[in-house]
Length: 378
Image (cartoon, rainbow, N blue to C red; front, side, top):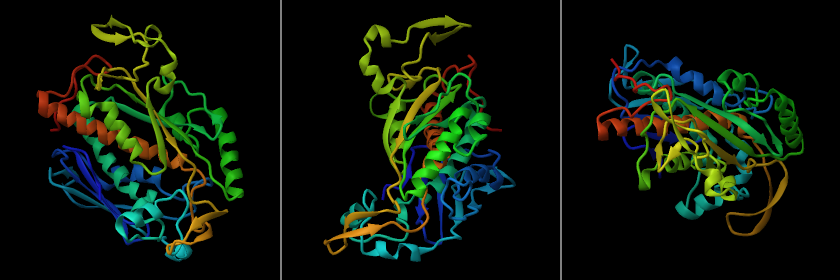
């Protein structure tokens, strides 16, 4: 089913949107890393539904339960199992979708592939599956801080919703400025226009998409492998595995195609005893390997597929029909997608950090501060 991600820090998510619960098993977490359910809950609260007036009204506490892998608030080195029970599931709201495929959703392709599907909320294709990713990433961030790069920051933010674009300076944006508003954008001037747009399309029974940008600071040099396991390739796969994603670009991205090599190249210089670049059009990755500069990428999210407006579709017995969406859905996934993007970035980074240690016997070269990576957890 393709429900496992990572090589050394490996996660397997499980559960359906309207089943008894969802969760994750994390294998490969080093021992003796401090971890409690409260550490996980912080990020689940940022992802959960019903958190603001612009998200789905589904009322879920999304309370994490650690079932295995810890003792006295420390990881054991054994698999960590986390459960989040579904409380406010209403499968009856999806009864019409038992016999009709939702346009641009996974209903038809899943049915065509497996010959069976869970039509209650989309099953495994629901964004509720990402609970397991976010929970696992909370552990990944603890490992990064304890074992490798305590100063590393992963800062995703809403860059645009529809045609409304925020003005965000990667050099100065902070987690506080991003989390200070319900849209999760670092530009205070864009908050109200974005909220108004989401409310407008929701009132029309419609939806809207946008772009999440992500800045990663203080990245060690040397993460990533040449050829197939390039760092940006793994980041791209991670981001495009998220529901509703349709595009990924890093650094200059597609805009770089309009430059010449002289304009695009990031010249090197020495600064405080380490190699730096005078620009960062590479987005912090060169030859598939991190160069110590900030990593900056963008992820495009399409408008939510389930809308409350009648659309042409096909029934499960293959006749033309019509379907109007029901149930509880986000008119815009962007605000809740921010912790999901952060989660997948953390999972990629921790996996490559563990691989770097296994391959080269160290934690990578210099970090963004010109210091060696952190020691193993004690």
